[in-house]
Length: 257
Image 1 (cartoon, rainbow, N blue to C red):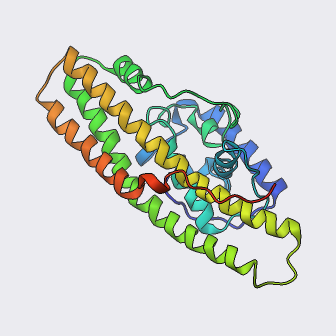
Image 2: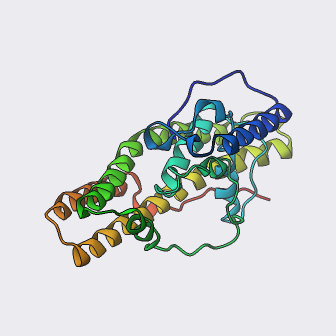
Image 3: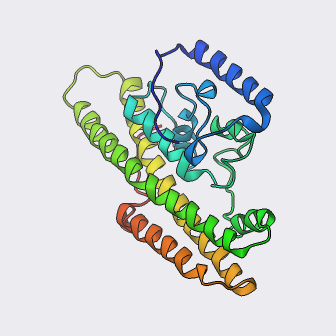
């Protein structure tokens, strides 16, 4: 999801209340819950830390604890942009997808969910109508949307990583630092690193899903449109390889529990 204009920061209690109101509105709005490019949530359903769970789930999935520190503006934007790249493209257009924006309806982060590269194809084929061209076009559109969102996400990720390095360095120069302060600072660094690793993994899986769908189309309804669609997917894979170099993809700083 793209960044939004921030409202004055609410307390945790107020934020929970705002989230409850937002989700209640989503239920009432039904099919009108989402609008805008990339399935952005309607402004009245947005709360400040709606994607804070992305960091918590990312780090819990690798067996490390989350931090209780407040999010910086860049850390919040990292989570907002990460969600747009880890959520299946076909889910963000659903009327009830706002629930998933708030991290609801997901399996526990410690539960291993096997990647199903056919899931995208199943949804695409269900929505496919008369012309195979529309199916090819949808894959191309989804892959190009991912390309558009890659650079902004990683631009934020670079800024966050720079601040994380400075935070870690500051721990050895500031005295006294209480154990909870030190631990939560390092745990937040872990969260941020784990988010980037999650996005890279999700992007690789999305590319496999797009390729699988194109292969099924080529077998069932071959079309000259397949060439342009494959070009879009190849561009996406090239950009992913540039932003997610393999040796560093799953690198996480370990902090004591």
